Every structure is written in structure tokens, then in C-alpha cells.
Image (cartoon, rainbow, N blue to C red; front, side, top):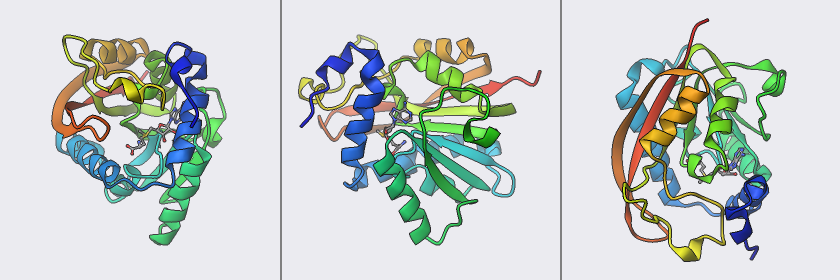
Length: 233
Ligand SMILES: C[S@@+](CC[C@H](N)C(=O)[O-])C[C@H]1O[C@@H](n2cnc3c(N)ncnc32)[C@H](O)[C@@H]1O
């Protein structure tokens, strides 16, 4: 198996290491991932119900993987576009959507590494961009947040669900997991606020949502949702 230890200290290699790992993982269906997708979408809907309109809302599911989040989300919005760097995950996402009888204009995924440059995703802009269980895999959440903010319509919201860092900075993933995939040990409210405000998003809010056992360690981890709003200029 590939060893990604170096990527822990080489942010420029995070994307390639993530892609290799999640390409490998795309063929394993974890009930755990589906359950987390269900709980994260439920938490977002409970906290901000006004953001989910099945006749109007166009959503991006960033770092969509095989579609654990999109399959929940698609019931409550008009359309979902998944985006991921793992081709194998995107292929599986689209095959499952077709099996469910969903049309591409309702739910589809594209394989891309977004940079926030004009013309990406055919110039599509979104009412909400959601990103679940992935921020702790990104080398720079400031940069990712800036990119995602550029895909929001004015007044649109970025919604992120992830694992909260422990206040004492305790490691949340076992050492044995480090070589498998690059990641951080959760995210603090301050880091999230700085990233959102740095990307020009207003009205930052965050809520603790649920605790879930991590598959790799069996440890309980606290999840949160965060929201920021793109200002109408
Ligand atoms: C833990 S999975 C989460 C998948 C899904 N959001 C869920 O909740 O089930 C992390 C995902 O992030 C994707 N990813 C990592 N870096 C990325 C990047 N730079 N751009 C897009 N996707 C990325 C991986 O390919 C993987 O599918």
C-alpha cells in the first residue's frame, strides 16, 4: 500500500495522496459513511431549514466521494452537482444515481480539482455549497474556502460539517492511520471562522451537532456544522 506520511508535511502533495487513497476506497461501501452523510444533512436541515427548497435550491456537494451526502440532499433540493478529485468515486456516484433513476440534471458528479477560476463548472453558481467529512483532509482550508465561496450566488451559503478539534489539541486519529491518508486532527471554531471570514463570507455561525465513533479508533468524536453567507454586493 502507498505510504502518505510525507504528505503530512508536504501540503502540495495532499491532493495527489487524497486522490490515490479515495480512488482505492471508492469500491468499499461503508455503512458508516452513509450514516454520517445522513446525520450531517439532517443536522444542516435542522439548523437552517430555510436553505433547502426542493423547487429552487441548486446545491454543490464538494468532495462528494461516492455520494453519501448527495443521496440525502437530493430529496430536499432541486439539483445537486457533486465534485471530487477521485475519478473512481465520481464514477461510482454517477452509476448509483443512474441506478436510482435520477436524471443528470437532478444529481450528477464531475471529477475536477477546482481552483476558483472563471468558467469552471460551465460558470454554474450555487445557492448552497456543502462539504462534509472532508475539510480535515485539505492542506489549506483558507484556500478551499476561498474557492468554494467563488461558486456561491450572492446571498448563497457555504455549509461545512466536520470533526471538532479537542481543546487540548489531542490527536484524534491513531498514529497507524497517518501513513494511509493525509488529514488533520479536527478543526477548531477559530480556524473555521478565520477561513470563512478570510474568504469574505459573512454571518459566520457554528453548532455542535452529534458525537460519533471513529471507525479507525473507536473513539467518540464531536461533529459540528458551520455556515457562512456570501454578501450581496
Ligand atoms: C472522507 S471522504 C468524504 C466524502 C463525502 N463528502 C462523505 O461525506 O461521505 C473525503 C473526500 O474528499 C475528496 N477530496 C480530497 N481532496 C479533494 C480536493 N482537493 N478536491 C475535491 N475533492 C477532494 C476525496 O477524494 C474524498 O472523496
